[in-house]
Amino acid sequence: MKNMFARPEKLSMYWKETTRQMIDIGIGSLVIIGLVSVFIGAVTAVQFAYQLGSSSIPKYYIGYIVRDIMIIELAPTFTCLALAGKVGSNIAAELGGMRQKEQIDALEVMGVDTTAYLIMPKIIAAVAVIPMLVVLAAFMGMAGGYTACTMGNLVSEAEFMQGLRAFFEPYNIWIMQIKAFVFAFLLTSVSCYQGFFVTGGSIELGRASTSAVVISNILILLADYILALLLT
Amino acid sequence: MIRIETIKKQFDDQVVLKGISTVFEEGKTNLIIGKSGAGKTVMLKILVGLLQPTSGTVWYGDTDFTALNNKQRKAIRTDMGMLFQGSALFDSMTVEENVRFPLDMFTNLTWDEKKKKVNETLDRVELTGSNNKYPSEVSGGMQKRVGIARAIILDPKFLFCDEPNSGLDPTTSMKIDKLIRSITVENKMTTVINTHDMNSVMEIGDNINLLHLGELAWVGNCKEVMTSENQMLQDFIFASPFLQRLRDAANSKQ
Image (cartoon, rainbow over all chains, first blue to last red; front, side, top):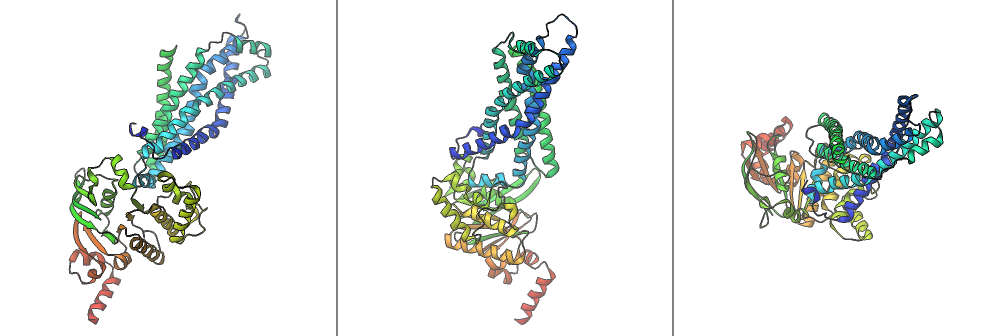
């Protein structure tokens, strides 16, 4: 971890690598995150409408619940769990492959600080881009909820919009961003570790990739619980 | 010049190198030869600092490389180039980007200067016009030459080659050998080659170090190989019946 923050040999090369990672993580994950979020928002709206049934709770609460649950919990957690699968396994496989093909050794012999050059840009890119993806996921989730409610006649458009605007607590945005930042750091650092220190052949590389996803997911859920206790 | 003194390397209970001392001379192709498992790769990795010896020292000129930390080693490493057994080219980069990488990372040359230097180096390794190809689009021999180009682009003082001929046909092997030899002489580099290719031993072995079970069994040059009576060297060099017949034929003529 300490070596990771070593002084770069050449800042422009590190920046180039960071932007490449940002594009890979950000643009490369837009479709999956969009799809996951739309459906989660839709399912949340439909199921909450079902639970409300004929109770006396106003229907506009569906919009309110979809908004808050997306912001506080589902957008950061589901996005990062999905990214642990997509980005985490990708990072572990990329670094593991580089290790096995002696590309990391080649960089070291050249005099490149490999932990700094290969890991730091990934972590910086992830903690910069993933919170943006989480914001997008929250909006997409609300859009999914809106579409499900209006198309399924669960609640009127006006009521859903009223719910989206009701009882808004700006602090919840902070909770979402703190969670996104912590989860992003966890999933990239775990995946980098698993890939960077892989030994053996293709079976071990596969195991490292799987471990990256499994350990990241467990740590994200654990961190989610701890952050929930600390922040709410 | 590189000098190693009583290098010992142990992995758990297994002693791979048992106190080796030798000198790799400037402007010469220094070969480390030996059977598989003799400790050649471990020795090369210790020389470039990828492995730390259990005991002993590696001297680059007057600098004790083994006593330096990673930060201090960087200065010497910019004078090193290394060709890996599998070439270790970056798959996602073109030939030009691979060769240019050390220039991008360690120099402040302009784009045009870098382009010129890359093209000169690609010409030197006979890869003119291959700039935009990816490593997967070129042959094994060409990959080795790209590896050599990347290793020498910063005009290093020390060149290390790990099995440069592995997986290559005899003709391509000879081309690679000649290329390494000529670069070594022209640039007055200290070149260390890890090989068990007999052609390399006979053709470019200015200074040959035979490793046997982790010990230095013989030191000499390619001319002395034929006349040496060292049994371990004879067993290694003339392992194949074909070479034994050649040797016997040569002896009978004398």
